[in-house]
Image (cartoon, rainbow, N blue to C red; front, side, top):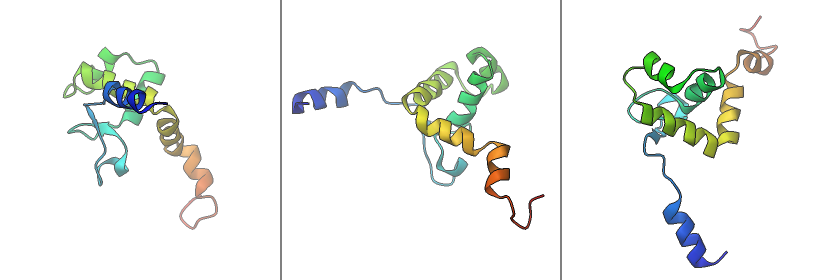
Length: 104
């Protein structure tokens, strides 16, 4: 790849203006700016069949553009977000903590 091509890719690559990561907010997961609504949650709602309109109705303090940007972020970082989804399932934690004092 030439330097010019790398520069063009860097300039034209979309930035997710509604997504941020902040230390101390949702464990550093990507969230919608100014909220604690994670990209993981939006992706899970989408996978469960909820439309963007339904998601905005559930969380009226966010806008459609924010939800679409969260979904765009998800598709741009699918491996990372899918891992977060898996790590937040109950089954994952039961298996991970099996044999520890406080589990069943």
